[in-house]
Length: 133
View 1: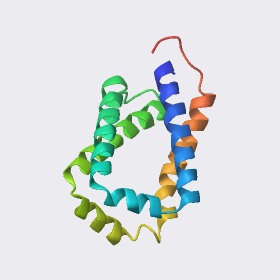
View 2: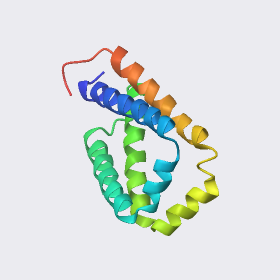
View 3: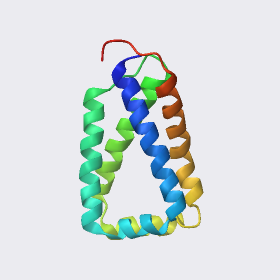
View 4: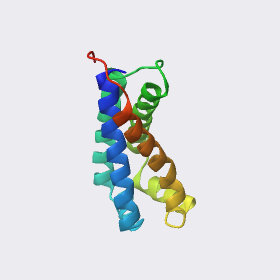
């Protein structure tokens, strides 16, 4: 397994698990408040877009097992999220959160991210690494 794949798996996995844990403790109100803040969401969109592009350009690996493919898919999803947030207006984002009943179903929406984060953390810390990137 390449060192870059292992590094990204560890980074994304730990970040995701910690973030989901904090969101579960703080509740859905922080997400709803952030979504209502247009300038904050624009900044978040730019950051997501740049991180997603960096991952696509640096780690666009579609073979070699589940770990590199999942890391690549996560990079593409981060990129897509950035594009979506750039295209949506704050009103559109608020409307989407209301239709999703995010506050009522927060655990359901966070569960996939948590599971992926756990897998990436476990796989990243148990995978053998090679010398090359």
